[in-house]
Length: 97
Image (cartoon, rainbow, N blue to C red; front, side, top):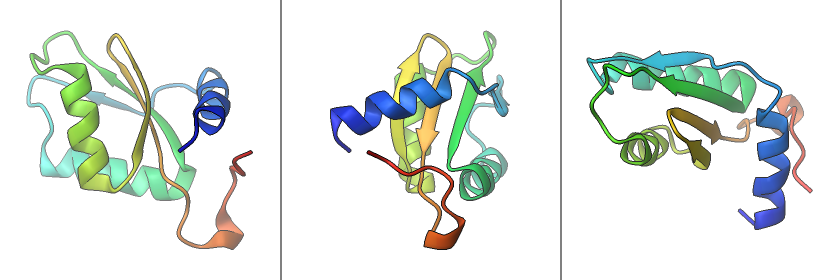
């Protein structure tokens, strides 16, 4: 992903609300599966990490991206933004520059 594409996605992410919250149980298989489904439906999602989660935000973002085959757009504090283009090109909502 180029820096121009990443910048474009960051701009889109500013307007969306977080879809998931990761709590003290951390990154469970259920959370990973739910995030994967949401990425397929929305392509760009925002996730909040709650204060009772002791894991590092960047490590969680990297692990989640690897498990869902997505890309980390940005990590700011306790917010993670992930992007994964839809498999079917007809269903893609976001066209990268």
